[in-house]
Length: 311
Picture 1 (cartoon, rainbow, N blue to C red):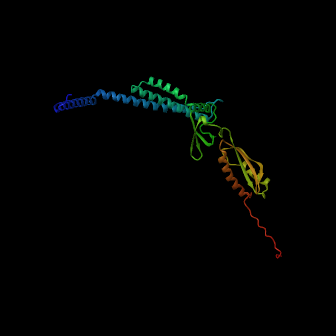
Picture 2 (tube, rainbow, N blue to C red):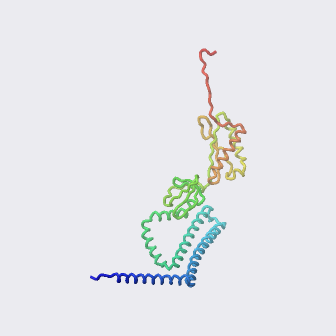
Picture 3 (cartoon, rainbow, N blue to C red):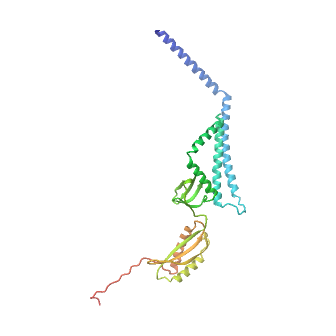
């Protein structure tokens, strides 16, 4: 067995120390040469400039594409095949989203190419991976197909007032995967297209305003109906612009315990029946007060029974 002496250990440590110093010296020289090398900085600047230009060009293409899409749909063609405004909004939003995805995906591939990453191999691997994932993504495929048929069949569009499942509100966005509905309280209801069951679209046809007016039993019904019809025939157009035609009194709807219910109907623009009904109730109340048409209200009748001592 060979035993290392102190001199041998000291010599070996000195050799290691010299090797480390030499490596540090070489690394420092290389770093200094790189930092002071104008070619390195010129190449790095061009690389950063190319990436910056890719991002800028992609952003410009997205903005210009959105403008062109909106302007192309803003041209109203005089044709019976012209799409409705609500369907135009839906298709515009969908095309804008699709354009954004395609342009930014292409920009990402271009940036990866600048980093010397094999984009073709990456796409081939992504295709195989996508095929494997596709078998487990049946719900996603169902959402996309359902979204396509919603748009193709024009079941509802952006801006429509609808009831989807248990949610009722205004459609703000229709995508290939999800639909967003803004509820009355400010909530945003997001539902996958594949889970959309029954849909009630209130914005397709004109709405019907149904107003039941309670009158007291002491009221002359024929006279009251005649006065109310005269009032309805002279509604101010500026205040009731959403009302189509002239509202009419169709007669007594029912007889309640303390009132006679007179029904008034009117046709309004889609989903405008709620606002028109509030205004009509307010104006009818003022008109009835001015013309002495009594509204029912709780009344109490007291009967005093006579006793034997009363004369």
